[in-house]
Length: 246
Image (cartoon, rainbow, N blue to C red):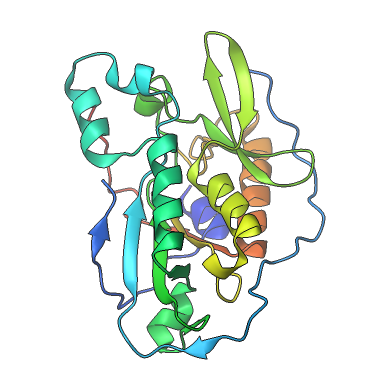
């Protein structure tokens, strides 16, 4: 199964990036997305020779009532290591207002960072984009899907049914960059990492005996292809070594 994971997402780039801030039912139909228009700035970019900051998150808490309502150890872990959709939206606004711009991690490692004049670079990363079983029922998304326009969204499942929404990190960054082009240089959106434990992107591709494993792999590959095409790097993180503790 490691072969399938490696085929979907490459190993993470060894990066020398200065870490500064740590962020604490009906299946969606997968269609072949149209060629995306990569977002770029409309102003000249200038070289940056200083440090590049790194801001890290997990998948977002969409339903705080489910995440934090029960007073147990999992709720405490979600408080310690996750942020909510509302909090992340506010963080994006503050980053933009304070002059920060997303840059590509490969450019950061190569020392070839460019930003709009007067702005500062940072790399955004999201880890454990697997949508583990333990978190699915606690207010976090179920899996990444493509909507009818080919855009990456998140599927949620709760007592009222299955919903596809833009309330997760990837679609929120996509939307924010579309509305604020200066927030991304060279089309950068960030880096996401998967462990391979319990699949990738919410697709349980690790179960080779599942009768629909080929369909799961196809859906996961479509997500990976779309992410790369729209400025998001996807890579392996701690492959097969991480075991989340409820």
